[in-house]
Length: 460
RNA sequence: UCCCCAGUAGCUCAGUAGGCAGAGCAGGUGGCUGUUAACCACCGGGUCCGCGGUUCGAGUCCGUGCUGGGGAGCCA
View 1 (spheres, rainbow, N blue to C red):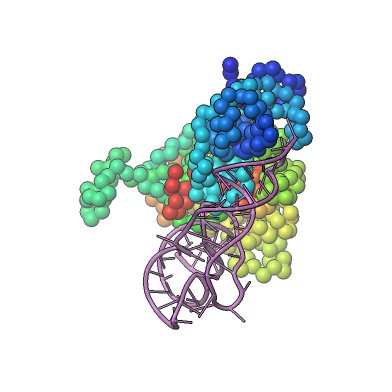
View 2 (view 1 turned 90 degrees about the vertical axis):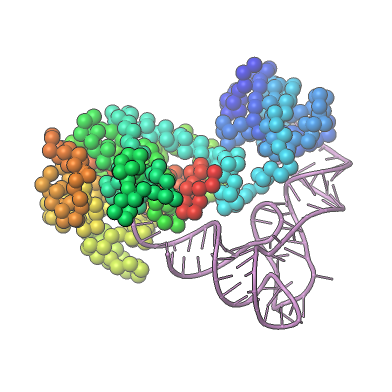
């Protein structure tokens, strides 16, 4: 007999004579002559109640079932005689697949997030983390669905990259050299003898690759892991995280903002549609205002605010900010939060940032002062998307790189794209984990990543 | 990297003025009951984060290190 997943049974609208489930014991309550067992198989937040009669063989063993044990139950799906649930399984047979010893660390009550992080291998067996990672899975699918419906192609950009490029943050170096005794040349490690014959790193962004493919396939997106070796100790940063990076040919900054807004709006709607039960847990236990926040994000029109106007609003706010406001200063976390949480109380897209604070590849605007950059800010998270129209004019791009004293040699291929059929194109990066924090209300990025990597922590 | 806070039973925490180490949950035993984080009784359970100092006496005060959390920077 084939096993049925518990979420299927809970959706039934009539009793079933013969079913088989397999899962883990969440709790057991004994009664006179029988025992109630709550079983969860991870297919949904909800458990199913199994009723075991004392007449079953090895009932004495069953009465010793501990939280965390794995069991298989066959029996009939019947309407529950008790309140609290519609269906329950009257057990005809119960096999103990594995008995968890009494030191199983997860209890029936709530644990702290900090403690659960120390047992990341077991925390998906809790209600909250089971829900979080089911949502993560659904959202990953939702991203592919969103882009596929718009004719985007999915690009696998490389994880291993040559050095010198991208310039988006500190790099993790990858080497096969013997670190205790590396070959030397002119006083430093000789990377000509390394695996690739030059320095190699983990990627910090798939953007440059995506640009090449946008100029071939039209609209593309990457969705994969990225790595930053920054010593960032905050609840919003991880050394390994996933990024969604669409890149569109024949698209300017307005089209870019349209896509960013549509992506966040539609994914939020999708989450509310397909993760209803799991989201309800977060709305109940993690963030009471979650549903109102999500409705706001899914339904309101996002404010589009030129950087210069953002500066005006901030200077006239009467707020005493820690960091100065003025053209040429980047917006700090406190400024972003003021705009999206206090002033507008909805998502805000700030665009046309000063050239001086943005990277070389962003397109220089007609005023020569600003670039066609945009950041999407959402309440409670801050910056969730950063993007730009890319500089497609070879001379302007080269001049900019010279101005920033960059070595153009290793990026010859990137410049080549501006030599042959260069077109206006745009794209952005969405931090997948930050998006999940927004959707679930979870406050720490470590709690939306199965096995998070942060400075000084690579356990599991 | 900088600033702030915390570390006591398996977990969540209390510990008053520097004076005998505590509760709830979890676990064990027994009881009761179509139960719902079941309930009742009893029992077992401690390197009070490490090191050093002050003191007759330190979980408590001081120094230092480690770990965790929050905020900032960097960013997604």
